[in-house]
Length: 117
Image (cartoon, helix red, strand yellow):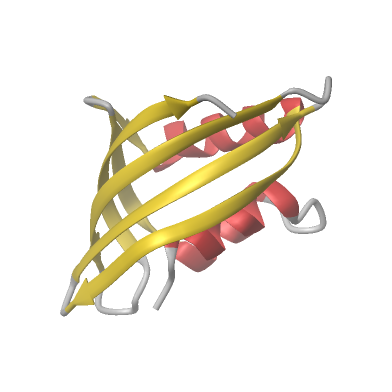
């Protein structure tokens, strides 16, 4: 089973793995994600992650709570992203997701809020 924190860690900190490789490990081909009400498909999510990689030096993910029950997944985390100019941006995310039979994420809905660091 995938975890969001592991997927984000690989996406934002593992420059040796391509975005597509990481997505294939953690997300189904028909993956969809809503962040604060804005939906993207897997291709749109890949675009977002590719962009984030280009403007950041890495990220730290702190899992506050995580729960898995059958195919349902819930998690709350704080992510601190270090931008290339040294600025650290932090946000808290609350999310609910669905897992496919193979343990990868098939859909995810999250709400985020910025944090002052």
